Length: 238
Image 1: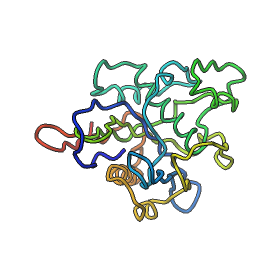
Image 2: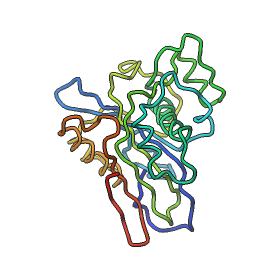
Image 3: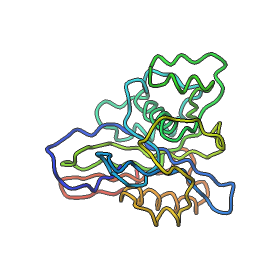
């Protein structure tokens, strides 16, 4: 989600959105999944990003096989716009998993053994894999709200999950989606040479610094939060 687009439109209410960083640490250096947005996209065309997107109605109706860690839920609810709730917090994590599946074919979940009622057409393809979404190992690392005046506005939460939680890490599902192109595992150094939205670069730096600190990705650790206020950009840890 890129909060630095030019001021071009009237006020829009930010829509809840979620992004997932799948962190792989089984090689000589950490890597994560990224893809290039289509050049014809209306939002951030040609930019490299993590998989993610806006929350859909179905994300709050589908029950995961494991729920959020309580401290992660509290981090999501902290300073939540509108009416804060556990259901909205869960929907954010669910959106991150669904969008990741739709865009790169990776499954963050556990076998459901036939006990997964999607109640949503958007979740049907995921359920057909034999897996249900698992939220217990997801961690929140950052949040950013696109400033007023942009063509699209999002209140985006950035999650991190270890690649060991991916059910099909080396065998992604075939997907019919051209939103993200050139999807592959990228290191920090390689990512910084790509065409990145400013917020993606910021979150990369937050993650890189976090990995240098013991237990920095534990549930409930401080979250980077940036947004526009009447007095200018506010960047804080909450």
